[in-house]
Image (cartoon, rainbow over all chains, first blue to last red):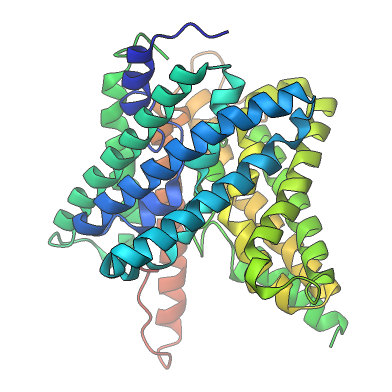
Length: 195
Length: 216
């Protein structure tokens, strides 16, 4: 059993143990959808929602799997649950926010293959979190993901006005900015009682 | 259509021309997370190659049997099956390695390269070219991981494959084995490749000037 308090988990996952900047989960949307603030924020929230639903269902799924001694099926079950959740979110966004749906494009169904979502399900199982701890872990993780995405989008909007050498344009400069962001998040180390 | 030449092309296509890391910038999570040492990078790359080749083979065999509506879900289940196999195999072979790679072996499922290959290539081609293309792609991925892992290990720990290179007075550049180092080394490699591409286009002035670096 893990004895991290809920506050610790929340702070750790949001700042020093940020999913994107410290654990490299969910890099694809981080580099792909972070061009504009107005799409980065809803994308972050959609992902955060999927992370929470996936985490809750993964928790109960895991209880079931452990009960029947089927732990080896965990990866398959988790990914199937996640795929279904993403499908649900996709239909919801398409129906109620059609403009947003078009802006997010391929990246919305790609939440399925977002490592952050599967990562939460796997890490919370590996660390043996109980229900409220898992909830805190997934909420903190989702918010941390949104925070990183929004910060990155803000930086990249500024970057469009900057004079970047042709050689470094595109993915290279985004990665460098991501590296600097990651460097600054390391300054939060120890804030949640240490990783 | 399966002449040796075209099969070789399928293989080289994934290995070099469409290298998943340096050209397409896909599969970033394992690329940055596990490349703190060259050994980790190679094992991760080979594990991914196995899953990629095996799942592409199966997807290609079943390409007429899988209904179009549920294809993504079917691909993911196929991929997840092979990932589970690899996960348990690595655990049985080397516990140290298993602990070093941690949950990232299971996270191969969520690697965009795999689903991308299954959807874009294996679902439309017969088993042999599909598998060869997947193997080339997987080895290209391994090559990319190794390039990043080697640089990070040399700079951050002063060693390569665990063998110390510079003697006891080397002051390790610790930031390189921490998360930001991953970003910087990958960015560095992308710049090197962009420079190569630029020199190539300058040598052939008849071509239309291509923009350096894809719009990510």
